[in-house]
Length: 282
Image (cartoon, rainbow, N blue to C red; front, side, top):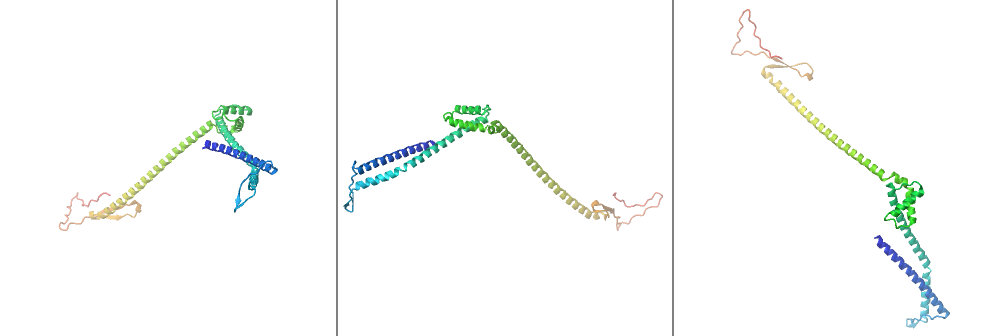
């Protein structure tokens, strides 16, 4: 796109220059012919013209005078048009020069960031930069003024190139990469800790649920046992101790005599003892 635009601009400038030259030549020629015709040295232009059937006398003279005045009036705009074209050309050349300066400065600054320049004094530093740009394959065709300006700009920004040198930028990137890896590991540790906490919480809830179920089963067994003991001949008494102890006193009831079989009396003797019902051990 840029080469095509450059060709079109160059052709446009050439056409404009030819048009201005032709207009100036036409104005001079018509002015000379008209003044010569007024002085009687040259004839007037002869044009036969009529209007509404009536022939216009000296129509060629009036056409020549009008055309001469028009072209001469247009010729007065030629100096201003030339100044505009000159300003456009200077602006275009200035833009191209600034692009070249920026490109040369960029190359010199990149070389300065790579610590290729060693001279300390301003003169030697600028000369070293200019020599580097002359040896550059893309900058050798530039004008010396552009290279000198780019070299001075690069020398002024040498502190900036030292701060943001390639080694400093590489160390900063390595440090940031290490920090990023540490942050990633820390996030992984946090995720593992969070998962472990959730697992422990779930395990604790499961244990509490199982303990509650076991407590309910123990309470149900105690209730069943308390309901079954009287049927087995045990008296269930309550102990006035705190409820937390859950002590239940059981006293075996005396067996009732069978209605059809009377109990035998014990025989008297020195070794006879009363027969007592056996109590179960508490």
